[in-house]
Amino acid sequence: MFAKLARTGVLVASIAIAGCNDSSMKDFAPEANKPLPDKILADMKAKGMVRTSSVMARIFKEEGKLEIWKAKTNGRYDMVASYDICKWSGKLGPKYTEGDRQAPEGFYTVRPSQMNPRSNYHLSFNIGFPNAYDRANGRTGQNLMVHGACSSSGCYSMTDAQIEQIYAFGRDAFQGGQTEFQVEAFPFRMTAANMARYRSDPNYEFWKMLKVGYDNFEITKVPPKVDVCEKRYVFNQVAPDGQIFDPTGPCPATTQPDSLKSAYNAYQSTYDAAFTGALKASVPPPRPTIAGIKEASIVSDWSKRRARGERVPIDPPSLNSNGTVTETARMGRIDSPAGRKMAALDAEKAAKQKAEEQRLAAIEAAKQAKEAAKAQALAEKEAAKAAKEAPAAIIAAPTEAAPEAETQAANADESRVTKLKNKLLGMFGG
Image (cartoon, rainbow, N blue to C red; front, top):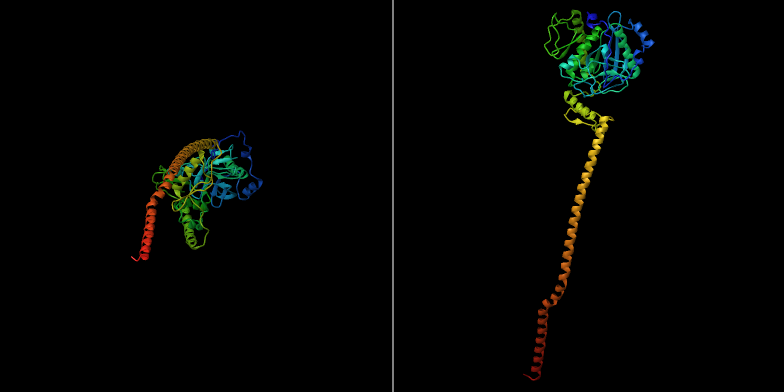
C-alpha cells in the first residue's frame, strides 16, 4: 500500500523554462549534469539506497532547512542530506496572492518539465504553486522556485553549490523512473511544542491541516498521497471506484488501511499528551507570521508600486495586530528600466513644481514690494502734511495766551492805582 501511495512510474523526459521571474539565457548548462559527491553516494549505499531511487524534499521555514529524503530498498524513505536555506522571503504562513513575497507552504509536486537547467539563478525547479488547494482557495502567484544565487522574492533560495546537489537528486530520480517528486513545505517542524507556541496564530487552522500530512509521513516514512476536496487537503484517503476528489466539491466517502489508522491514532495520542505538557512549558516566543489575506494584499500593493518603479519604503510593510501598518522610514526605488523611467518622471515633476513655486514666490514678492512702496508713499505724504501744519500751530499759540496776559497786566495797574489813592488820603487826612 505504501509503495502504491508513493505513486512512482515512468520518466517523462521534457524540460521547460521556469523560475522566480526567471528565463533561460544559457545555451549550455554543465552544472545540471554534475554528479553527486562520492561521500553522499557512499552514505546512500550504507542506508540501502541506489543513486536513482525515488526522492522527496521537506522544507522548514523557521529552522531554515531543506531536507532530501530517498527511498530505500524496502520502499520507506530516509533522510540523506540536509541544507541550510540561504534565503526565503516573507514570514511564516502560506502564500496568499501574487506579489505578497511569501514563500509557499503546503504539499507540492515537481515533474521533469519543472526542472530548469538553464536558469538565471544557476539551477532551479518550479515547486508547482499554485496547486489544487491553492487554486480552490483563490490563491495566486507564479514561478515559485527552489533555486540558486541566494536571492529570494517568494522562493526558497540556496547557494549555487547546494542547488547543484539538490537538482542532481531530482535528476537522478527521474532517470530512475520516478515521474514526480513531492515537496512538503512547512512553517516549522510540527512538534507538539511548536504547535503549542503558535496555537493563537491566525494561520493555526491551516497548519493543523498540514500537520495531518506531516504526521502521515512521520508514521509511514512514505510521502503521503495528497488530494483536495471541500477546499482542504486530505491525506492517504482512497475514494470508491468511479468517485473523484473535487477540490471545491464535497469529499467522497473514503477508506484508509486499518494499519495506518491504528498507527495514526497511537501517534495522535502521544502527541496530545505532549501538547498538553507544552502548554505549561516555557518556550521561545513565536516568530512573525503573515496576518492573512489583508496583510498579503498590503504587501502585494507595495510590490506592484515597486515594480512600476515608484519610490517606496525599502522593506515590505507589516500589518500589526491592532490593524495599523508599519513601514520603514528609508525610501528607495529599484534600479530597472521602470525605476529609471519613474525617476525621470519624478524629476520632471519636481522641476515643474519648483518652477511653479518660484513663479508664485516672484508674484508674492512683487505684491509685497508694491504694498511696501504704497505704504512708503503714504508715510511721506503724512510727513509733508505734518510739516506744513507745524508753523501755524507755533504762531497761534501766543494769541491764545494773550487774554490771560492782558488780564494779569490790568490787575497789576488797578493795584497800583489803589495804592496811590490810599497814600494821598493818608497825607491829606481825608
